[in-house]
Image 1: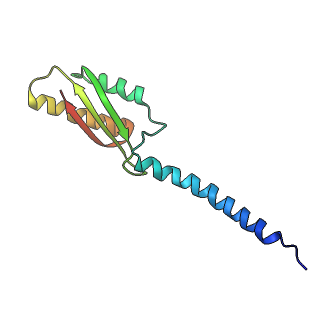
Image 2: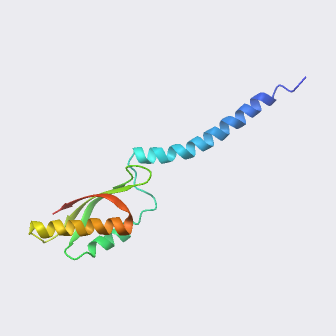
Image 3: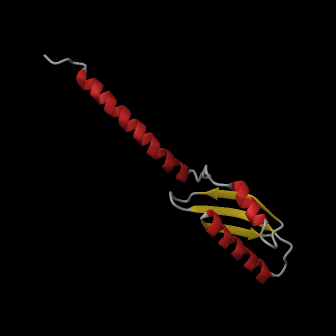
Length: 113
């Protein structure tokens, strides 16, 4: 007669295996759904780079998140002394280009103040 503890042991091992792998996968999904900031994103470097753009006085109200597993998005306010709308729009385009090229931010919502 085979031991009666074999089936429950194998079932428990399979359940633990599924739990571990499910937990690892669900973390990514929860991070996207909660619009969490990416852990490896260089906020300080990004702020430094944007402040280095000619015409930028300050950057604040910064929110970076992942709308999905592959893209990054950013929302921020850019302070400038520029009052010419065409020049302010050009400044916004330059910053967006910088964010795309240096930080792989595909979607940037910038409010120029």
